[in-house]
Image 1 (tube, rainbow, N blue to C red):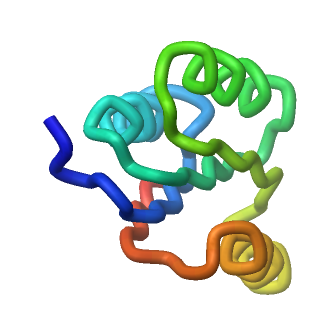
Image 2 (image 1 turned 60 degrees about the vertical axis):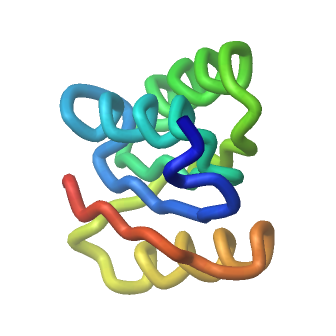
Length: 93
């Protein structure tokens, strides 16, 4: 199950619900790196720790308010700086 091997993904709304499920599925499918974005930091950290403990994907968390353009741009810049690119974007938030 390597459908996403080598891919870099951003998942907004990734701290809970559908977004968390998508992030988990991407890690399970061996995405090389994930940025999980959400407005609340504590749940983000919990999800990231869980994924790092169970899968080999690199996980970056980004406290992001998707209604704020500057916040979104900063999240994308951090992802590109850390992982070199973005292949997949899931706008769940």
